[in-house]
Length: 575
Image (cartoon, rainbow, N blue to C red; front, side):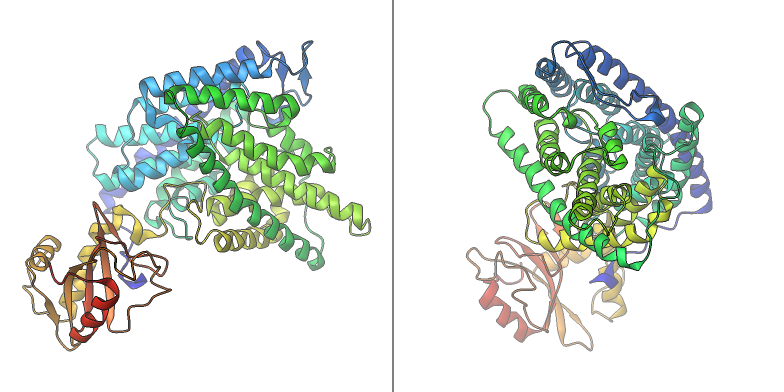
């Protein structure tokens, strides 16, 4: 069905110029918004984690942070007090003013793109910034990319509404906002521009028509943010770092396998934790309080999992963490992230995922060097490539992740091994999660362009064009609406020269083929399913799609094939 997918929208010159101007403006807001959020985060950190718990994790030099861990006179025992209070405040604010701001913000932007015409309420970015600063500043284990993306994405959405943009234009500007916020927050313009158009889909498909605008917004956001903090990469990595010969590639491939396996577990733990929190009695607004308490208790044993963890990632890159801790921290960080964000706390999942990958990469290199000292793998190199490989699989964004991590670390000499590890990790993760309920960290992702409601109308128009091109015996002025009306009346539409007709039919209750993916129970060569109407949405058929009871199917088939399909699908006949 790939040939039926619409081409990217081709904007008129006047529209392109207007969107480019708006993208520049969104980039400015993205850069300023990133600085505003960092300021909020620092204030929350000083007030909650330092003020109440007398604890401060190590920072990173590029942001002026103290590279040393600071533990007060009470040790680590007051950490649960700070994290619990942060969870309570965050939960109360979110569920009182903007419930859609809970969880990780990038997924909210993906959902808005596919299902809400790119609309984000004006209050959501403000609530997201405040609650994420409280969550992370109190020690909650989350990343800052979610609020960074949603601030400028929300501005793009509101701007589009104010100036009367179409739904398609609003989606474009929202994506430009995502790119601007991520670029400013992580100093990675190219990676952020690609991520904004790649994260929408789980099968390496892109909204290519939006890329020019995400690139402009990302560059401007990066430039504005850099005017305040400079343009050095976030992490301090030796600029001469590179791999030394093809014999190392086998170890990077192994790293891809390891991170791909871990990336298949991460979404399951994250969303399974959310389900468990939702089953708890009591108000939803109190669940982040419990999540804060749990992550605080875990932080007493492993303070390395608190907050964003950038300082600890830097230490892993530097090779200053012992092997046993490098093996424990990926598990502990996954649990801590789930306690924080799955309970309803605000924050992103990008940074925690990078954290897990960094530790796994450093652990692999450290272990190999201990077992075989002559191998001499670079811990820093494997840590950098590991952070890219893990998120590549967990988020299904291999291209963007590779660019972002290289930009964040300056490790351009590692591009070749990163390409290998990222690809292997992605393929392993896709294979291991092919039947999983939660295949990706971003549940709002859809598998492909054809699965997005954004393209359903275009898809139906394309079907009508194919019917006309096939000399179907129907009025040339037929529209998608008219086509459905004809089919609902029981009209089968013959297609000349094929011996087949287009029909609309329904799957009976108890049909033998219901619930079985099409690739496991093919319907025969004389049947082509054009689309599946399931309740209030359209499902584009693919090999992994299973037909369900009650589905209405628009199919192209012969009379004999219809009789054959009736046996397995219990078809009601044209309706």
